[in-house]
Image (tube, rainbow, N blue to C red; front, top):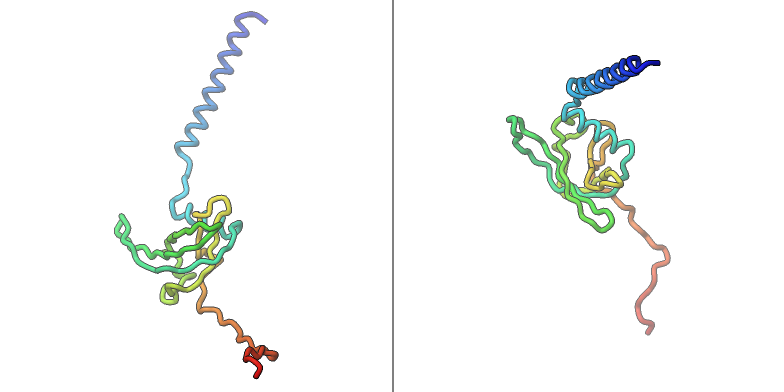
Length: 154
């Protein structure tokens, strides 16, 4: 193999590397990126499938004007993990088929799904899961048939 043949192979390899880099760059620039709604839906699906559940409390359900003129319906809740209080909100504007805003009551308990390594990443409502409770749980009355008589004997 002569020096001229080696030079041709080096040029061909360099051209192949440049073509590959150009193809990867074009793919990165022109690929379809997910919309913010798709990213939020993927986040809710991830938490539904792999999140841990903890008890929380609904604090409020309120409307917030968005920058684009829409009105967002927000759900405010808090929960405690490892002695740390977290207060979060979730946009439930596009989830009207899952959440009836008229039934959301401030002060009611709820279930919160959170990511174990990132506990501030949490949800109360998703497409296929809801941590909302319609009414407060009713505990059964305790009737002790052998009640202690704490009166002093006479």
